[in-house]
Length: 158
Image (tube, rainbow, N blue to C red):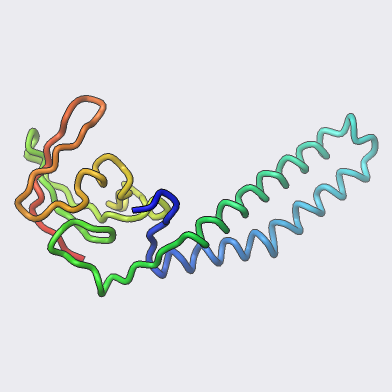
């Protein structure tokens, strides 16, 4: 898995394109207007509103550039072609913590889609990395800040 590649579903890819379109067509003109309005208020050296508007514009341009990069490096993964014989991107894996016997199910996703509350963990997270390539019945040993955690892979689905 390449460091720059963002593995996403078609749904997430479409959301990123919509967000980029909104930033370019709505947010960028609004930032320009804010700068123009602040510029009309006098001396630019002592105009905090102007400085703030310029800073906001710079942050917006950085976000646009980042999103463009993510979109250009995106790899859309089709859920119909996923191999469930082992843990891969977009599979749902049920694991049991060997120390606590607690069972949990996570979907392995790209960084852009990760949302722990929704049960989605990034393939580049420590647990995600440790589970990648594991098969049902295997134990994944994952280095955590508080030591090594062991998880048994119980089930893999889409």
